[in-house]
Image 1 (cartoon, rainbow over the protein chains, first blue to last red):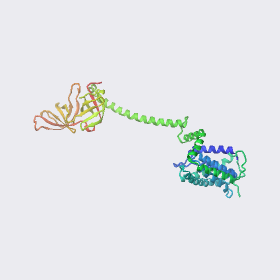
Image 2 (cartoon, rainbow over the protein chains, first blue to last red):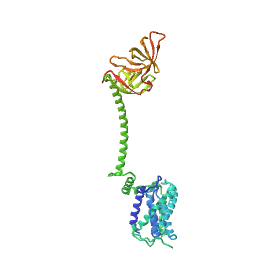
Image 3 (tube, rainbow over the protein chains, first blue to last red):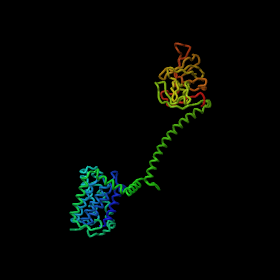
Image 4 (spheres, helix red, strand yellow):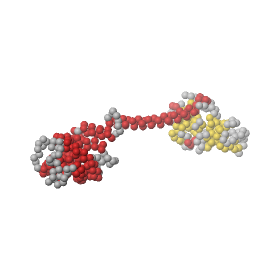
Length: 167
Length: 268
């Protein structure tokens, strides 16, 4: 993987996520998509296992840097990203709709884990539970389609040999 | 690791990252928040640009100016709107005063008089009020007070910035008046609590209810007749049969006074 390109992409995503994503907010509850979640799922699906695990933790780190406290999202993204990189060995995630479902599922799980970790850490939870576990992953899943179409070109991955590895 | 192949096993990578993440999680928030501040400080420029773009996208189109300048202008605009509203209210109040004074001076005789518009800001009992004009505004004791084109009282005392007004209904108030047509002179005496009667009117010339009562000319202070009220009841005085017993209703409701004009002896 092109790590420099990866870092630039994550940095841009983090900056955009911290403010510019507000433009896409829906309803009065300010439901926003999570770009870092989309990227985490993308790299977990498309990279070799070691790179997927590392990229998931790095993305989690950036999510925490722009978030409410350090640790919860780092651990949640890392663990769920690692799990997802394992899941692809038993489940086909070749098509974009399947990947969108993976975004929703991973987002929900990340939300749940992060909620528990936020309470352990004693940080204020930035958004309410339904938002974190349901609405944000759902919105992210809807937006993930175009991203999953563009990102392989940006990262020069194309149809990588690692993509959707079957057992 | 960047630029080189990852040779460690995925289990090692996961455990290493997981341990690192757990340590970060367990470090107190006070310490880790410094990392967040450092990140934000390091990327303050792109974060600022991103925020500006967000604000620009959220706010209505403001051509040729930055979003911050637009917000500042919007704030200034609101300030000006409020200032304008206050100014409009002040102009309306001033216009009201001008209109009142203009109407007073439409009478040619009244043009010789000077008027000082005043507001009543407190009442001392039923028949005394205090106005916001005093010696500094050329108000002197015994000056007549006009309200709605009728005499309502006289200045009792004048301080530097305020004056006490004795209304015509006060038990100590006296005013030389005449009942119109035929012109029958008398003395208006207040009986307190807004009641008043006209005394010393000889029983001879006919007096009827509804006739106007005017303040008599008083040298220097009032040289034109101005209405005071109307006769509300008249009867022959039983104790002094050669006099009328006349009651008067003031031309203005004395309990509802708000703004008055002090009549100056001459135009200032």
